[in-house]
Image (cartoon, rainbow, N blue to C red; front, side, top):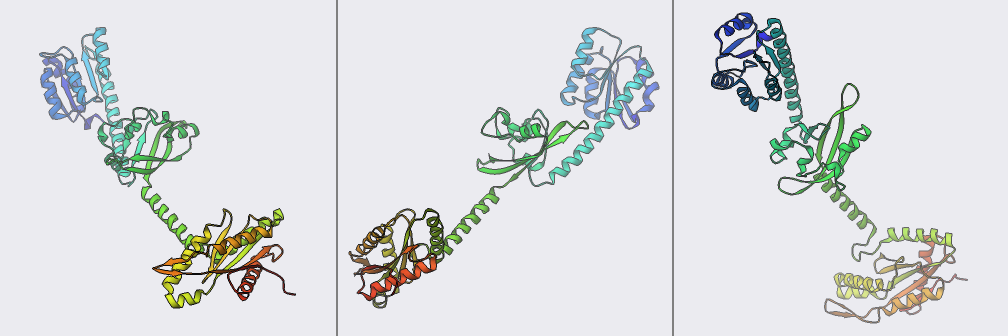
Length: 432
């Protein structure tokens, strides 16, 4: 295991160097020797050795000063102190610099070999870990969504390429809550639920939706998938967060919903007047029947037909005829109440369903109001048009117990109004 490694040996005593080389030189791939700290730092920077052994009492610079400089760039490099001094102060300073072992001189070769083999084993494990980490990094870099590997203290242990690209100064982001430029963990903020909190409590994966801002400051809707990573004891050792941007999906969903609502509206409304069409009217009447059956109340169906509409269409054209229908619908809408339904039944025919009446007189008053709406002329594209309407009224339940029958009887009453001279209303009466 040592044979694949290089060693930097920093020692100023010639005989000690020879003894070490004779004892351990063949164990390593290569041994670099420095007789002072400055040369040691130079070789350290040029050769990048795997292990360092150093004395503390060195010319020009102490071994501890040299170690301190090395630790600035390589905090985990195995460093072994081989010194004749057992002073407590030196030991404490060595510990503070994370020295791996402290071997006193004269050196016990078996102790030294044991320490070196342990260091080699650690290096080997770290290489395997780095290889695994590199493989994992390659794998998650291939995922198109941001992926973050988070430790229980919110430290980001790993993030994929996409996550880095979406994060400003990603090299300096150490905590997951800093990704959103926050100063406290998201779990402590009421307005932003942290999925880690849920996963910690349940030990189950969870999905939450957040609104975040991208680098340009645009709001993005994201779906955060958080799942726990367990250690051999079944305890959570880390969290895997995958964030999926659903902004476009929600936009398309909103468009589809809007289109569906639009199509639904078109299928249930007259394209000219935007009033409920025959299909929606039948549904409203059936619902009214069901309600009134439960309350044992009445309601009325008014069948309204514009008088002499064909003559207006023929003389002024269909465009002006259509405009008259629109204006007539606007006027009639003024007399209906919430819960009533005004519908264009077809051609110049309208149907009004009145649910809030309790007596025939009330329905008659509404019919009379509608007729008076036509007292004033209609001004259509420069044409002053005088128009009236004929109305027939049927009442539930006495004139019918289903929508078809109520409409037929209201229609019959309307034709009776026309036959009696138009511009009037009549209630349906059963023929003898």
